[in-house]
Amino acid sequence: MGNWTSTQLIVFFAPIVILLIGLFIWLLMRRSIRTRFRMNHQLQADPDISEWLVVFGWTRKIIYLPVIMLSLVFFILSLILKTSSGAMGAIWLGCFLINFMVEEFDAGIKELLLLILGLGGLVLWLSYLDWLDDLWSFLGGISADMNGVAYLIFALIFLIAIGVSWVRGLFFYVAFTPNYINIQKGPTESGQQIGREEISTIVDTEDLLERMLGFGRILVNFRDTRQEDIHLLVWGIGKKSRKLESIRGAIVIERHATEPL
Image (cartoon, rainbow, N blue to C red):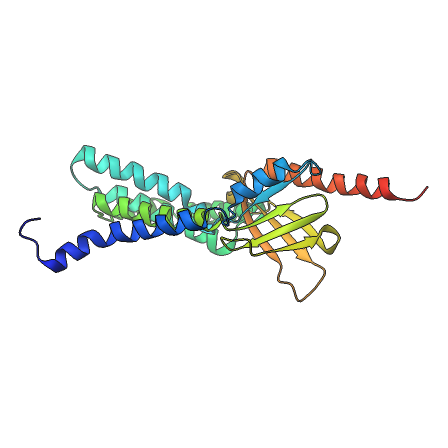
């Protein structure tokens, strides 16, 4: 560092200064910042609320989790083998393309069954024409050389996108209670509270890969057509859907309890 120029010193200390500024802003605003964790604790401490659910939306890039895991495995293998393999690159490319097609076309159970039937028919057709061996020879000759660091870079790109959606979910979330929902749209107290009678909720688990990874969608539809509907990709959809049903049940019981005799 003794031989660095002033520009190099500025570049070196710039991230540290930015972190210190961010920490200072956080200390000044820590009492006004409302993360989903703080909202959860607030609802838990409310004696009038026995059922609640706080959820946020993950990015759809979360369904690239198989590609992320494969990339990390191939990165470790490349370090062990000390060399790159064209077969590994071809396998990674095939997995990525399949994942991309699933994301692009929102493949569900029906689409998957149609794909399996179509591939089965294609294999039978090629076998009947004696072209199946030639196809396997062609596929076996595909090679995609990739440096081991490339696998790590691809994994980090997807992980950063997923991490950003998690951080965003700290400040953009929806809290469900028996009487209302709270829509948070920022780091401070800015939010919107809407009565439960003004909305309807739908749980969507038709996407096969999302459900296999433990994800599903919670849709919030508003009676006021000027209000934009909310679509949240939620992890742990099985448990959260049951919690949402329990909240709906609490609404029904509460309405019957207030009905005149």
